[in-house]
Image (tube, rainbow, N blue to C red; front, top):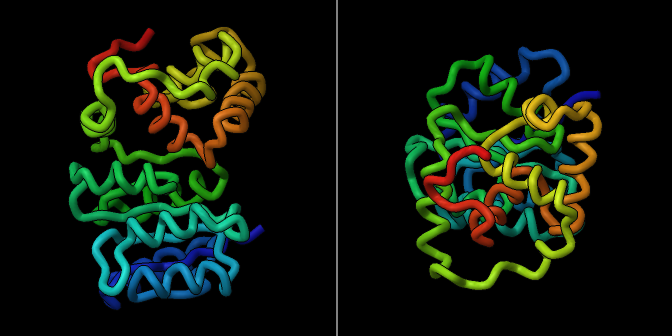
Length: 225
């Protein structure tokens, strides 16, 4: 099955470079290009894209608002957004995750990392670049949530095991890592993650990470349990 990719960047030269890389890879295809966020939202609806490579800083509508609109549109529930940014330590990256992005990468990543990222995000997994530390996410989200604020009631829907796994997801562990740590099969770990996503109404793992920090279940500086 071919993964259909929409490129959203206001620089035509950058789009051309990404198109050349993506179209040269079996199983991946660029189906449309957008020069601004508004066009990206429209093309996400008409081009039947699976993944949108989204720049943050664009005219007319920036990538944050475009990501938010795509994530909020029920008809685009299967569309994943991968944010590409020049500045990986920018707080806008965390805003993009809150808006519904499935992950982000720096624009200077090697081609093989870009292609891997597209496949990971298309599969519903979260993808944070190696330079994107938990500290970036936790520092920003902790500042939004007053100390001692009540946790979302939705967390009460989780079983003890699901809560435990949510913490590990927030620390960046993959399903395989979680399975090894908790002595589970990878399939069982994935099932627990999917159930947590369903109960918390999260689109993907990136949203689980954001929710874990927003709720205070995981805090900046917490050690891996």
